[in-house]
Image 1 (cartoon, rainbow, N blue to C red):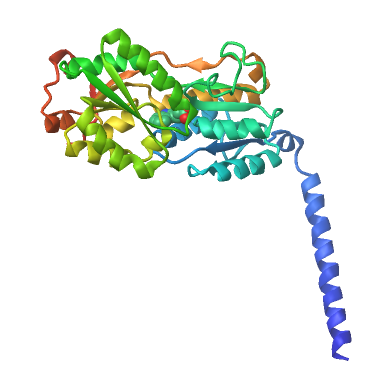
Image 2 (spheres, rainbow, N blue to C red; image 1 turned 135 degrees about the horizontal axis):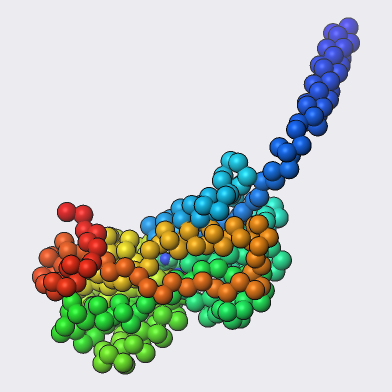
Length: 337
Ligand code: TRP
């Protein structure tokens, strides 16, 4: 008896639910035509790791997309993933992003872009601030990428940066470059620094670390062997910037990084490409592809050729360095006094 009653009740609920569902569908179908036409575009973003520069780039990407008419929650959906510097996470996350078949994929930093590139040859991939897209095996040619990949490069103006360092440290004879052996973006910068060193009569010593764990001891060794430390756009090093500065400060060794955010964290000075602007350019390029106005195949890689003069006067004071007046006048001081 009880069972029968239960069946009846469940039956009534079922009929009610089916009815509601029907009304819902009816409502959807009767929506005005223009609303249905505004198609939501989807963008999958894979960021290699969190550090201030990459976080700025992601902010810039959203801003660039917005400038071009794509707003999250309106006509844009962003699926964001952060690989936390873990190669196996990057691989699975790339696959997850690809399976959703987005209109465009964006890779922030070289290892993330490489993981996306290994996953799809069809979906357009935008490079968000990749040091050397050719050396990283992402495109064949910067002018004519040819495949499903294009984007923005942040190759640092290494020569200008070292010239600046020598203006601040006129007695320097040896520079040490600290980088991660697992990042393709850093290898090409070591070669470039060696070339610049020859041109400027500076001895270049390279110090590779397998992971962040070796940074403390390596910087300690560098303190006794070099006159200043140069940091390329290396993500492993950037995500441990605090450790680098703490350790370098113990031996009062100046640190010349590549970006403003790292000068702010205790670097001495640099000529730095604005990280937010890099993101904006990437976002705008993605928008062009979303609109069907461009294809990766025929869109050249966009490179930033110049940077801003950035100094940290507080750090200079700590190191006992006098900053020449002309630099002081032109530079942006990012020290937190
Ligand atoms: N160019 C780096 C890459 O290709 C990413 C990057 C952008 C970066 N800005 C940075 C790394 C600042 C260190 C610091 O992977």
